[in-house]
Length: 294
Image (cartoon, rainbow, N blue to C red; front, side, top):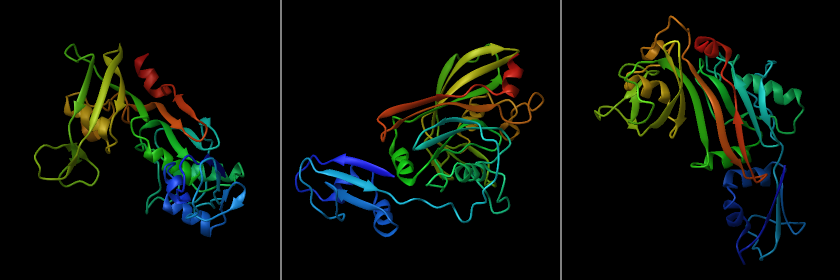
């Protein structure tokens, strides 16, 4: 893939100029050794070439081969959005985001690997940008090349993820709220998390905000925004304030109505700086959660 920039600083080395655009040392190494090139005003140069104001710098990244260790599988993906750099999938509940040592198949990464091959894209390496728990549904972001992945990871305030969640409603429930509480591992478990203020185990800052957008059938539909990205963050925080998610047996949710946590990533917003546009995508509530409200 090709990316073009105009130098605006005199006598700056190419590598430092490109670093401003999140071109990493690792990516420059791939360009140097794996078949890419750096052109300045149409002439091939190296990373230490010194630029003049107005120089046209074009970087061509090498094609990325499929992951050798990742088994590609055919699966009918629900593609919500796609451009030259990003692929957004609506993940159904019941599928893992990534493979494990005991489960090398059946994950969304396996399915995306198969999709990239079927589409015959030049870049066929899977770059997972956002994960969801196995029993959480909704939007997942995959990057279609490593440069897009590094750009997305560098975004902070510009990146927004929102979830729908269902909890049991009571009259004391606030219409909105912010939960600012550190999350760490629960004792004796590699899976379960909890809010920790005791200092006995490592805990990382976590912040979640929510708003009640509907109340039906004794349930509250919450629109939840993640301000940090801790494991099980929404599930832990809602249980911490006394409103565990419907179906979430790990954190005390009612499983009579639903056999998975009632959590769905319905919105993502981020900048595609390559195309100078904001990507804002919505994904509707899945049928199992919608039926509970009906």
